[in-house]
Structures are given as C-alpha cells and as structure tokens.
Amino acid sequence: MGLDVSAVRAMYPALADGYAYLDGAAGTQLPAPVIDAIGDAQRSGLGNSDGAFPASVRSDAIMAECRRAIADLVGGDPGGVILGPNMTTLTYRLAAALARDWREGDEVIVSRLDHDANIRPWVQAAGRAGAVVRWAEVDLPAGELPAGQYDALLTERTRLVAVTAASNIIGTRPDVAAITAKARAAGALSYVDGVHATPHGPTDVAALGADFYATSAYKWSGPHIGAVIADPALLEPLRPDKLDPAPDTVPDRFEWGTPPTWRGRPRRWTTWPGWTPRRPGPGGSGCSPRWPPRTTTKSACSPSCSLGWPRWTRSPCTGTPATAPPPRSSTWPA
Image (cartoon, rainbow, N blue to C red; front, top):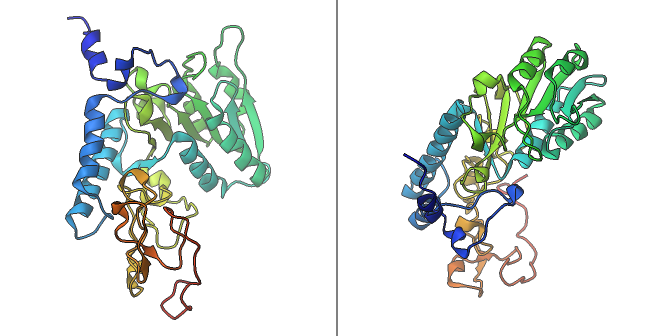
C-alpha cells in the first residue's frame, strides 16, 4: 500500500495556503492532532507541578508523558530527558555545567560539519576554562566527516567530543557510533546533535554511543521545544546554575525558567506570608500575573488580568510605573 500523500497533507492546516514550506531551519508545520493537543491542554487549565490542585495533576501528567514519548522515540530513559525551548539553549546549559570541571590545558573536539549550535557553546565554554579546541575537518569535495581522523585528535586531555548525527546543510551522516567509541576509549564524553537526524529514521542513543543526544520536537511536527537525553546517572553530578527555590532533582534542575507545564518545586517560597509563586500563564501571555498579589492594582488591558499585579511591580499590560516596594522584613526573600 502506497503512501497517501493527500491524506498526510490534509493533516497540516498550514499547507492549505498552497505553499511548500522548505525552510528547514524554521522546522515543520504542525499537524492538526498536535494543534488540538496543545489547545486541549491550555483549555483544561494548568498549574504548578506537585500541587494539590487538579490543574497541577494535569501539568504533571503532561510532563511525564512528554518525557516518556521522547525517551521512547530515541531509546532513552525518561528520567534523563531534559526539556527546554530549543537545542541551542539546552546545549549552552549543558556546556556551562560540564565546563565547571574543565581545567587549563583540557581539550574539546568540535567539527566543521556541525551546526554552530553544537560548536559555539563548546568553544566559548572552553575559552572560559582555558581549554584547547581541536577541529575535525570535512573531507572535500565528498562532504564526509572521516571518523579515522579522531585517532589523532583525541588525547588523554580530551574532555568532550561534539558531533552531528546529520548535517543541516548537506545531509552528511557521519559514523557517529565509531566517533563516540573512540571518545569513550579516550575517557571523553560525547555530545551528539540529532536535530536533523531524528526526523529521518529510527534513533537509538545506545547504539549511537551518545552520552548526550539533542533533538528538537519542532523538526518532527511537534511543538517548539528541544530536548537533551542522557543517562540520569551521568546528569546527577552536574550542578548547573539555578534559582535557590528551583528543584534540585534530575532532570528538573537543568530546565531554566518556569513555563506553565514545566516542573518546579518552589516550596521555600510558600513559607513567605502572602507569597505563592505562579508560573506565566498558558501561551506566555504578558497579562498573566506572576503571584497572587498582596496589594494589587487591576490591569485595564483585558479581562484575563483579573488578578492584577503587585503594586510594586510594573504592569506588563499598561506599563504603569512601579512604586516603592514594601519594607524588608524577616519574611522577605534574601
């Protein structure tokens, strides 16, 4: 039975305009089931995770299912699925955490075949640590990335090898398993950019030998989020910068910010009288109050701002100038 192209096209409302969307960097358009799932989640009401409210239970269930789905897609562990806005942001996050243990004279290897999102974070982290950057070269005009060259690049000081599973420009698919095996034999970690490889065939992070595997859902008809998959035991000793009340568990501690369905356990904040942190509302609306305020001025921008804003903040809707905050007390955050 052949592929029913018309049926597939009909699942993507955006294609009704008659255009062919060939901008690979922008990602795929969304099929109707994904659009409906996002809409259903937002209409159902979402809340802070680990709460006693039905909205919190829904948020927890969505996040758990998201991790399970991504882990199933690439053959990973749901407990090691880190979610974020995109692969670039997450790679910077992991680079900063990993580079904490790098020392002057350590080495990292990047390739000329890679997207800059799997180059610049490592180059900049190496620069701050005083580490040396080594480059794997592309064999021209074939456009291949020979795995054999890594024998000469790897040394006892190599800390990490960053390599793509598929080039975003020319489609080359390097022998990732051979490269990561060489890295592991030298005692180095591997970080594989799978953004452009994942949509084009089955993925098995174990078979690839990737210590870290990055992918983006919006390259395979999902919402605009990125993910990095790793063994939870590998993530456990890493200590990224984070806010004090943010969760300290894996993978939560790597997930910057608090979008409406991301996890977070701001328990210490709830000990401050009148303060219960609230994540920005569904859709990232600027009218969503961050806290149920103690003293409020109601915004005039829309009915959705009915909770108002703390008097000592600037309204995102009206731009009303802030007034002086209440005096510091023993219950005020340090």
